[in-house]
Image 1 (tube, rainbow, N blue to C red):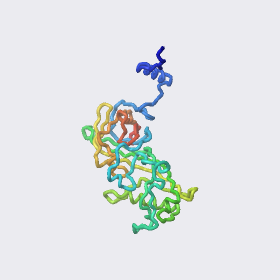
Image 2 (cartoon, helix red, strand yellow):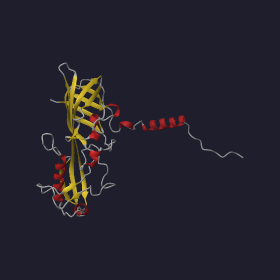
Image 3 (tube, helix red, strand yellow):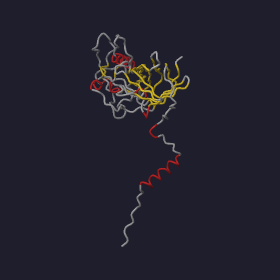
Image 4 (cartoon, rainbow, N blue to C red):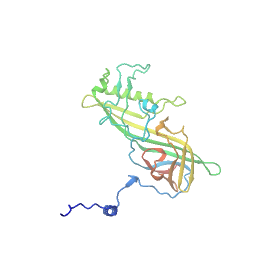
Amino acid sequence: MKPAHRPRIATPNVLALITLALLAALGCSAKGVEGACAAGATCGGSPVGTWDLAGRCQYPAEHPDQPLGPQEQEKNPLFPSLTPSQAQQTTDGDWCSELYYSPQDNRAPDPNSKIKAVNLWHDAPAVVGGQITFNTDSGGNPTTYSTALDFAGQDITHFAPLCLEFYGAQPTCSDLALNLTDFYAQAAGVDASNNPLPPSFQNIVCQAGSDGGCDCGYDYDVALTDSGSWSFAGSILTETSDPNSYLYNGQQVGSQAPTGLMVASTCQSGDTLTLTGYNGGNLSNAPGLRVLTLSRHM
C-alpha cells in the first residue's frame, strides 16, 4: 500500500525566501518599530542655548506601562497624564465617569461645589509648544538643562440623565459645566507659594444632549516641566532629571517620572536643533514623543 500523501512543510530557509519575496513585492514600505516617526538626523553639533519648539513627531501614546502608586490610585480626579484614560466610558468603563453630583453643597463657602467625584475621559494630548535650554559654565562645560513642553487635546463626554440625577440633584447643563470647572480647579491644588496650579481640564462647556442629558466638551492640557544636569558626547545627549523637578501641571506624578537617564540623538545645524529619542526611546520621558525640531530662541 502506498503511504498517504503528506503536505510538504516549508523549511526555515524556504520561509525566509518567501518573506524576502513578499518584502520585495511590497517595496519594503513597512514602518516596523519606528512607527510613524522616522529617526531624525544625527550630525552632532552643539545643543547649547535656548530653543523653541518648531516641529515634532509623536505617535499615539498607549496606556502607561508603570502601574499607578497607592497615592495615585486613591486620588480623585486622577493625576495629569500624557497617556489616555484607562477606559473610555462608552465602551467598557464607567458610563457616568464616576460622577457624584450632590444636591447639596457640603464645602462652604463655595455654593457651586456640588460635584464630589468625577473622572472625565481624555485621549493622549499632543505637544503644541515648548522651550528647552542647555546651560554651560564659564569654561563651556555642560551644567544644567530646563525643559517646558505644553501638551493639549480636546475631548467630549456625555452624561445621561441617570448620571446627573442619581444622587438627587437636577442640574442644568450650565450648572454641570460650572461645577466641573470648580471641581477640577479645587483638585489641582496650589504650589508652595499658595498660587493656584492649572487644572488639567479647562474651558468646559456642556450642552443639552438628545436624551435629556448633557454633552460636555473640554480642553485637556498638561504642562511638562523638568530640569537637571546634562552631558554630551559626539551626537549623544544624556539628561539626568532632578527627581523633584519633573512635574505635570506643577504636580509630582511618580508613575510618569523618569527612572533612569534620558538619552537622545542630536543634530544641530545653524539655528536648528533636532532631538530624536535614542534607540526608539521617548524624549523627556513623554510617552510617544520621538522627535523634536527646535529653533534657536531669538
